[in-house]
Image (cartoon, rainbow, N blue to C red; front, side, top):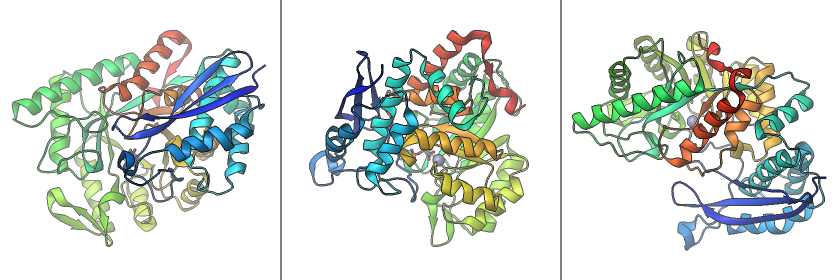
Length: 430
Ligand code: PGA
Ligand code: ZN
């Protein structure tokens, strides 16, 4: 028994203080579950539609149309369906919308219902959410994925669209690859984060945080941000390149203007060739193991140049490039544009399509990094998805702000519950 008896949505608030959609699904076994959907700022052009009301109320960002769509059209379709049949549910939602970018009903409406169903299905199946995800994934794709805890990518300096400072690169992240457990990763991350805070304060720099909980000081250059992080790692008695490696998300589409990569903070305007060289020089000077959105989402030649130059030594992650869409990912695989995909559920709009993108990546030796959005909520579903599909990596901000720590905290619980029966994915990087 797990037939859906009620689907109800309301408008709630996200971590930026903007409206977002929350949905509750109830089943005839008396159980229920709630979802809350995130929202991006540096969104990709090819992402599914986030339906906003416009007008003056809520700064034009209201989601009452999306809420109404759930309470009427989506509820009509979902009531009576079995919440454990995620792929069937998602297909029904995709069919109801009828457009590739979910323009009729809104990807935020569809995703709210899809995640609430996933959580509700797990409860009805009497399984931890990560196990329900693992069962869905393995049976759909005839895969044999063991559960694993991810290596986190913690974004401790915020720039770009996520902060009111002059840093062009959006995210400077640490990955504690030398830790022996997820718990140890978080201990090291917290120590580095604290050391960085003291270091910034000692230099008279701001210790206020950006949208993802990382510090957002004004600095002279991207290199300065990296140097500060390296110093903080050292101050904790850890070794950069061994215990901790660095990851960047350039979010380059945001500073690609008229065919040039414009680094305002450094007064540089570079063509694709020169920007690839710029990134290469960062990688040769610093222990950077992963670069996300190093190039603009439509600069395919730039992407293949970057992957050609650096793809054998580091991870090249497509976020705006792939938007969690199997069509865009297949294009990237065919043209060797990258070697990794960032996974964000709201870029595509259903759990099922998200799992399909992860599976396509896995079949083609692309890594998959499960990700939050810059606008988040306390919903921590991505933690369970990451463990359930054994993605090996999660990016969910600094170890600060409840919208970010809710995912890390969920992973700490999962590691504690599973103990030695689960591996920690650091061998990916060693
Ligand atoms: P966004 O940022 O949620 O604002 O898109 C995250 C990212 O670019 O990875
Ligand atoms: Zn990104």
